[in-house]
Figure (cartoon, rainbow, N blue to C red):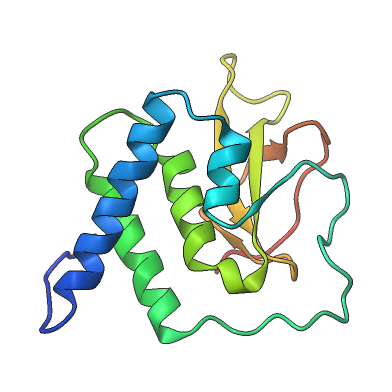
Length: 153
């Protein structure tokens, strides 16, 4: 479990991320179109069938300590958010905003055929080198029907 203990000088960052979470949550509840919301978070919605989102020669920088810390805070917010189940879309949109310098894509997926009888949906972020954030095994990218490769962070 991730603790939300606030260190000196870090409370502003946490308050800003919680505020951003509330804005994303409210926007989704008010019916703001997902493409518009993804653009505001500076990410594209990836519905392509390719395995790698960008040419291999495009360098992807490693995550900074600030980015890793913010992703951890987003995970903590998602695990404690009391309003509604399934925070994966909100988590993915905020993670994309944090990772915006890496050209992230929002991935929307459904449970693989042969999985649970009910339909399950999931959202995650994928970077050009195939790294993923908040991806769960057993989901395939919406429209492509092919399992997504990639290593979790």
